[in-house]
Length: 215
Image 1 (tube, helix red, strand yellow):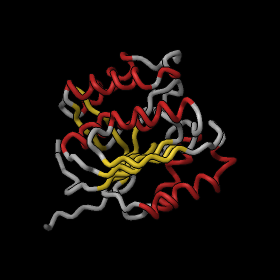
Image 2 (cartoon, one colour):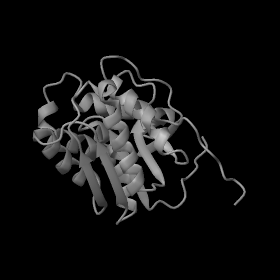
Image 3 (cartoon, one colour):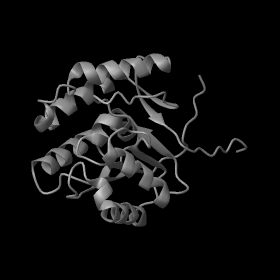
Image 4 (cartoon, helix red, strand yellow):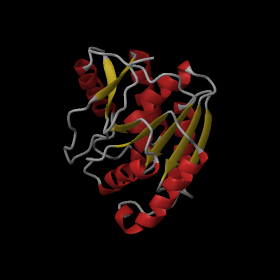
């Protein structure tokens, strides 16, 4: 197992189609990053859920997932499940995010995610962020679309437990969903941990990666 770091990280961007996507897919990674780099700037964009309970949940949750970070969150009001019909609005939002940040790392959905909103947002990222490291996070769902990831962020037991606790605490609107529980989140993290010789991990898809091994 080869472990390569991303070098100095001063800015991270994270995008989600819905409130809770970022936290579910990369919450443990955000906790790990922010705990090791106080003052890290995190620019986050969520396309739907703005103006109501979901936005309030998201703001409280990401503040907890990004402790001691310079968090800048935008939550829009695109209708859930309708991103393909609102392509221009979504594209404009991604381009506006690019104008205000030049991240060292970008956390986004996977391009082969079965949900059309996740998949559509993922495909927009490389049109605006052409020279950036993009990690495509995974979200467990009934579609059964989990694949074979290519990158892993190991999580300590404490971080994995904290992630699950924060998900349960900050998104009460989602607790009724059959897949939204401790077993699902920790179970997937345990499987990904096995795959990278760790107890727990979050896994990501990497579409393109440029190496600099000469320095």
